[in-house]
Image (cartoon, rainbow, N blue to C red; front, side, top):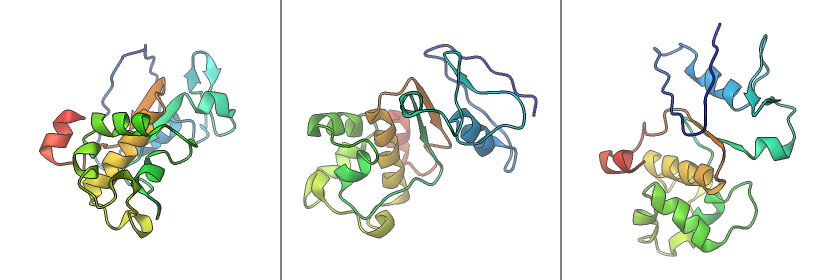
Length: 159
C-alpha cells in the first residue's frame, strides 16, 4: 500500500521485506499481471495492466520464484512463448546466466529433453533457464522475484 516509484533506464531496485510482506504482489503489479485497487503501473507513460496489448507486454519480462519448465528441449524452454530464435541468440542468453556451462555437457546439448516439468533440471538450472528466457527478449524492464535463490554461488555472482 502506498508504493510510489519512478525508475529510469538502467536503474536497479531491490525490495526487501519479510515473508508475506508483499514482494511477489509488487512483482505481479510491476509486470502488469495483477489489476491494482488504486493507481497504475506506467511504462513510458502507457498503463501496463492485464489488458495491455502484446507490443507493450513484450517490453517487460519477469522471472518468478518458481519458473515454468515444460517437457520439451532445453532450447524450447529458453525460447518459450517467443517463437523461433536463432541458436546463437539462445546460446548468448544462456551464456550470460551460466546455463551454457552445463548445457553443453548434456547428451544432446540444447536439444536435450528436460523431462516433465523440467524434472531432469535442478532448481538452480531451472532458474537459469528462466533468466535466459527473460534476457532473450531484451526487455526494457526486467523484474526478478528472488532470481538467485536456487543458484550456486558462482552462477549467482555471474547473474
